[in-house]
Amino acid sequence: MEIKRRSVLWIVCFVMTLALAFAVPRLAGSQETLIAQCMGGGMMGRGMNRGMMGGGMMQGDMQLVHQLFANHSLIRRTVEEIPGGIRAVTESDDPQVAALIQQHVTSMYQRVEGGQEFSMMSSTLPIMFANADLYQRQLETTSKGIAITETSDDPDMVAVIREHGREVSDFVDYGMSAMCGMM
Image 1 (tube, rainbow, N blue to C red):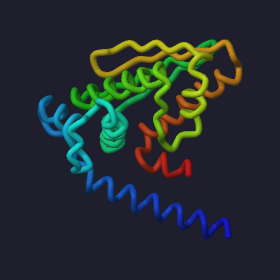
Image 2 (cartoon, one colour):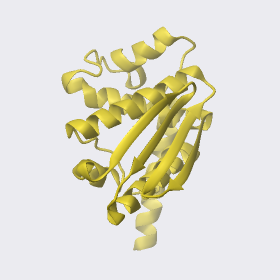
Image 3 (cartoon, helix red, strand yellow):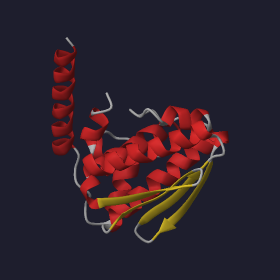
Image 4 (cartoon, one colour):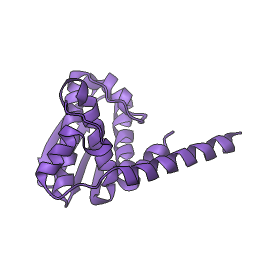
């Protein structure tokens, strides 16, 4: 029974990955197009004119995530375990992908600060949002992306921070199939 369930999940993930590969347009060649995609409909073909404002904020953030998944092969990431947490650098030589990385991380940190949870298939995000006061976050924009440092004095939170670092690295390395593996 477990094997059948895993087979069905694998097939569903495979089909979703194929659908995204064909449905999600690759980034176009100009900054104006990138902004239009993020603010005005972009990937999913819907008229999301609210962009990052109000009710459209979640849709805008989800668009960023989908664009990052679609372009994961253009992203590189290093994670270093430091006392109490991690330091991670996520970058791309493609200026538009670098801008997406910067937008995404900045938006997620704003969400954490504002208590606006981001719903995604992640075992660590709900814990990080629920315990935002237990860890420190610093971000630094680089010319090709972003560098973050996340630390905590709480050993359980340190473990969550490090696991989240591994989750994000898997997303960069394997794209959507990494998310499907979490099901």
